[in-house]
Length: 310
Ligand code: SF4
Image (tube, protein in one colour):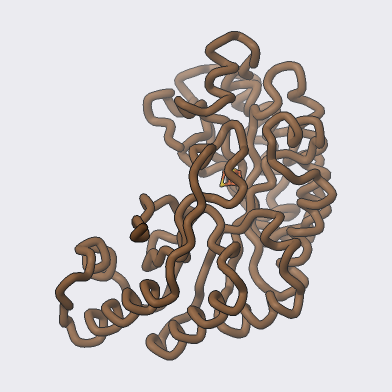
């Protein structure tokens, strides 16, 4: 079956990148809240990847379009500056190591101005790789890996069918750092519902501290139709937290997390209120912002529901 190009889902910080699919779907498609739930993982043939890279190089360097190449390639390439590439899809790091290495070598050969390649990875992908393999990829400009932590609470991780426990997630996150690659991780406010809220926030702060990433982002749980968690919520089996509860969780995380130096934000469109700063340096300012909003409890200070995004 021919490889079908996946929809572009990427971290906000990759807005300047060219999006190059190596896979579609996610190898760990069981997470009950995720829009990749139930997706089928497909690996793209190396020849297809190279064909796209050749077309991209020709267009980027000479403005020449080749027949038979998807118009999306040229649409993305139009404003691309040749510096950053993001490998799609849900966990492109699952792509077999020899082939991944070959893709990176090819990108380096074709784009001398390439500065950084980024990819999502599941904790399992990272546990499967040795630090030496990751270092090899870093030398080939794999400069940042995005990994979903979701929660540090094993009970929550089990319920959402993450497929890994907090210990494994921390180990995977630390491996990124050990290889000298920038680590960017995300956690999800509200993932434990009302009942598990505090435990989730505190355990998540602990897991984040143990990983000690370069970047950490908080997202707020959004119910995606078609996922098991959406269904549970519809049936009244999962009790979602309120927008202000999500800020209480955020405050607990900021209060309890212990980083060396991490850019921490809740800028993602799913959140009701945005804070950002470098922790621990900006801890007091960030906590004050949250305290102020939690004291006033004024809904008009929150992002309206219709403006929230995934
Ligand atoms: S591992 Fe990540 S991308 Fe894959 S299903 Fe789980 S949350 Fe979604």
